[in-house]
Image (cartoon, rainbow over all chains, first blue to last red; front, side):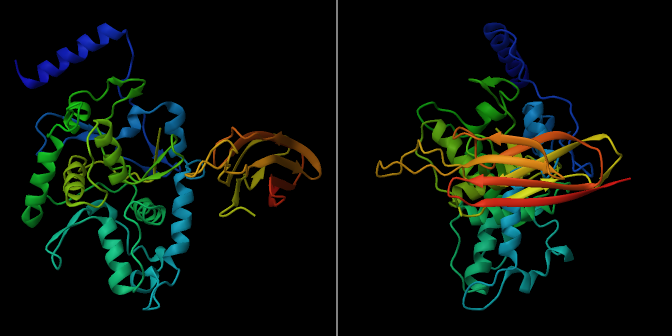
Length: 285
Length: 109
């Protein structure tokens, strides 16, 4: 019996066991501000062996939660974006510079598309950098300012701002060339079981998406919508904070946000969403 | 005044006389319930928006008493009929005595 058939069988058994708890993704269409049309379902990138169609986590949420993301006024994540817009023009550090001194005013659209290609190989550093690493390098090296906490509010807000201006563009992280080694490490982590519950990312997000995990719906664990505003903690959440939460839930000691392990995992998970629209700041529960 | 409080309102720019329009409001506020404790076990004092009102040309449209169980960044969406051109006035009342106001004009056309 091949792997996919086993998964289907397990799914059928689970449904008959617990009654018809419908946790399947829906077929709604996501258009933001009646303007930005989003790709939320598309063919899986070639490197994925066990999934044919990739889907944004948006499809796994209730209509009410989905609606919150369809209008920027309703999206509480935009509060973080607004505060990052202020930070963009704020001079900080010994060099007397703001983000806008190098990267221009946000209206100049110089930063559009940046979010879509991160994490990305950095030639000078000789390693893969996330957007967070890059922002902090800007702050410490060019601005002479203090680094932000990797998954703190300032950093996550700025990430949300850069994401918001790239919404609708396809995620397109490079996994060939020098980034390949890191990507392989990330893949390894994705399929490695951790914790007392011995769960890998794949056990939930590949084998069981569309099923219930307790009272919640399991998505494919796509990160195209990050930073995500979660209703449960009423703030924007970074990818690494979410990773940490997931690994913790397997009852394992987690890696730290910003650690090489999570950077590798972010590259791998991002590449599983190549082709989906950049969606952050998204709204999830 | 609590930190980072900023009112936001969305009202259509114009409507036909007698039209029912949808108004959306959101104010960023931490809405500290007064039930939580800090790391040392001390109660964090309550700090919420306790009342929200909307008036149109002096006539009250909505007047809400808000309680501590309301989540952070309270959002209200409601409908109002517009008999004439004029101003919608929105007011939020903070526990600490601060009052936040916002005005949006609407034209008939």
